[in-house]
Image 1 (cartoon, rainbow over the protein chains, first blue to last red):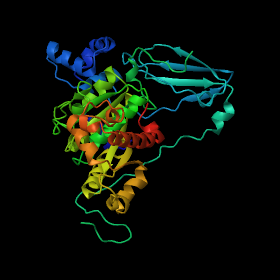
Image 2: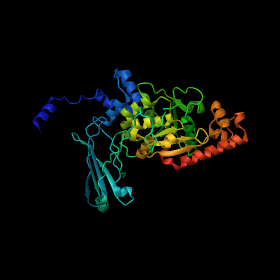
Image 3: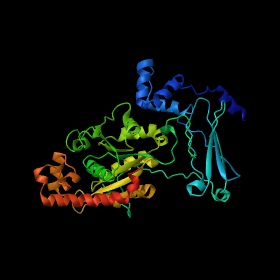
Image 4: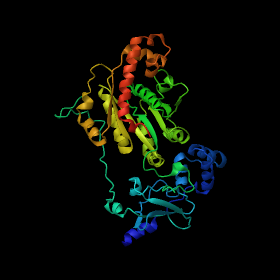
Length: 171
Length: 256
């Protein structure tokens, strides 16, 4: 890495942890008991004098990553056997919910027998490994999904509406 | 065994790929264009589909007659969006109740709504909430400008439905049909277009005054003498049939 860049990185403090981190277990339990995010924020304010909002409570439940998503890791796909095996390893304490979409073959109604195995582990970030069978050709034929940039709609409220076909504005 | 595995978390905290809950909101920038009128028809259509939904009346200006709450007393919840929590009511209401919310936004609600989408949209999306934004366009160019302003703020966060409200006979939609800005909006967002036919004042005015919906008039449940005339009942039936057909054709934008 360029030395100047490294110096900048070294000079930056890490992101401060959320003040709600220490209430994670409580928040989790309250959520499990059916309280809404807003009600949980109310409990924290009433009982612990912790002023927060719905979004922060939600972030704690999602895990320390907050609302910013890390770049998605592409699942490692191996084709062997008929069964599909899914392994998920949650981050420590984050207990982030992981929902894996069905394999393409499943979505297309082909006979893939899935099986899920969940293994808790510490000191590891979430990793998903999917093994599928009976549909290697389908996997091979699937083009990599490219993120399509959507066009931005630009509109100037200070400009009058302009008739099409001529440059004259409608006032 | 399912391919979907949830680990120790509430279901709603899972990242969603398709919306399993929906907020249908009016883009409330211009008053008196027919936002509530359309939402009433949409509410009756959803009821006709057997769909459970919750109505939120966020029109703080329209306090009495003509508001959603006026028509559905007890069923529509009044929400003041001018609070720090703003539109968090969307999330909380979906958290606890039906999977569809009809939110009638009042005139002048734009800034609050736009700020809320800026800060909360990503979280709402991950909760599986999809948004359908209803823009009402009349012959008045201000109604077109209002839709365009909202679209500039919301961009691709919502799916757009534009209702062309023929508030008068032979309504002229030049500002919607033939302006560069509206064309750009249509090209980018490909909104669904719905036409709402002009309605007789003899029906519309007493219905509004007494808080009677089109469906109530059409089925003679309005309990208002001036709305019991057979000709008005027949008119109401015709209006309802027309708008229901339009909604049927675009049902994927209103259901989950």
